[in-house]
Length: 332
Image 1 (cartoon, rainbow, N blue to C red):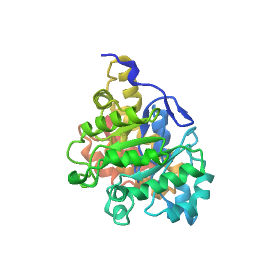
Image 2 (image 1 turned 90 degrees about the vertical axis):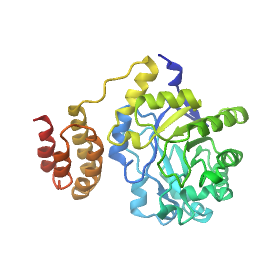
Image 3 (image 1 turned 30 degrees about the vertical axis):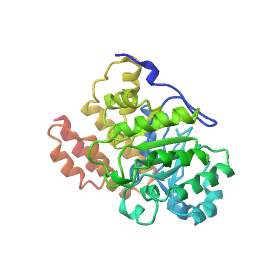
Image 4 (image 1 turned 30 degrees about the horizontal axis):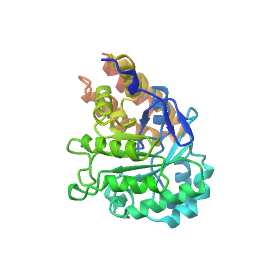
């Protein structure tokens, strides 16, 4: 059934965005090459990998690189993570120098090396810290502040509604919630009913604040269902976009026409692998590009019949020719 109203422009404070299909930040994945391809295939906004405020404050080279825009990124959100206001304040000038369109605060990462410092989803246990970060940024710049968070630390402590209110009362301009607790990680099924409750609360009490949903968005129909079931204003594709940047165009087409685009062909995926590898070689050392591309290839080739041998070869690929030879086996 056609429901074109589900695809629409988004305004986040003073920033107008053409549509409501966003690429979520993913450490180790949403680098310049991948963001470039997601934009090319329909993403309306992309976000950096999460960036340490301490690294920003120290003007660390690798951190600075994470805040560099892709050539086709007219709009660009930078996601920061921190457990203290001091490093945010010390690095704020460097953060602004990167010219972000939106500054996003990570309150959702469940990875132990992040949470053990008090950052990421550990902030669900210390919401007053999150509020101080939001307030400092919103008091010192007109750049919109967004907050990405989870439903709580665990099922016994789901505080997402109070957490959201605190963020908005201190100046946040948009929210994105991954509909699981920290302890749930990425399993089991995301709790979309929490997204519905969050959206209902925000729409009633905070006019003009968009809410984005994340969690279990692996196919275009998942996006359609989330928009209908939860009334979120937009979608944040994360794992569902890995190995499938086509998902943005496919979802947009479904929302506008009610029709599914036939899944990307093997040749489509091979061509995109080659394009992404070329971009990685452009922006990184070649040896690093060849290693990092392996994980992307596993995602691109997932579900393709007879791809196991190709994946094994790609896990050892150390040159562009290695990739070409391995991928050529798919067409045989």
